[in-house]
Amino acid sequence: LARIEAIAREKLPPREHFRALVRTHLDTLLGPGQDFIPVLLYDWRALDSRGRERAIALQKRYEQVWDEVIRKLQRSGEWAMPTRVDHLLMFGALNWIVQWYRPRGPLSVAQLVDDAETFFLRTRAPRRAAPRVARRVVGQPCSESQRARESAPRCFCTTRQALPPGARRPS
Image (tube, rainbow, N blue to C red; front, side, top):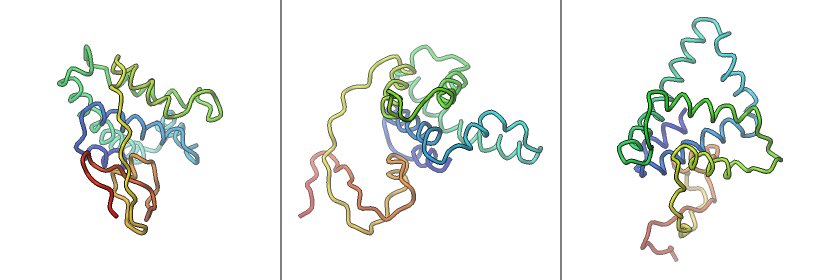
């Protein structure tokens, strides 16, 4: 939830917001050590009433982020022909992936993200230019939004970060 809420705070075009949410959702569902996710998806009703209330509250917060991005996509015209059940159909499709996805199979998570974006928005994403890359200072903490995009745990990283257009690499 924290990763999704961090993405929600970013200033991104609606399609990029959607793509980041899909990537994070699939990383959470399909990543290593996430075997508890199917239990949360399918067996949450077996929790006691207090546990169910907590699960429902978290689910509502999670879905609010997605609903806002879907509204932005609808306003921009990138979510064609909106319906009352868009987010239900979308989550049904995304969550069912845990039933058939195989990490060593023919599809990578990145390919699933591309295909999900195309399927839900019914158009291919515009070609993305390769980001210009700068070195980060070792020991500099990653931002919350960068960790969400990169699916990285809390760290002091040595990863690389894209430079804004026109920026120069530090010497």
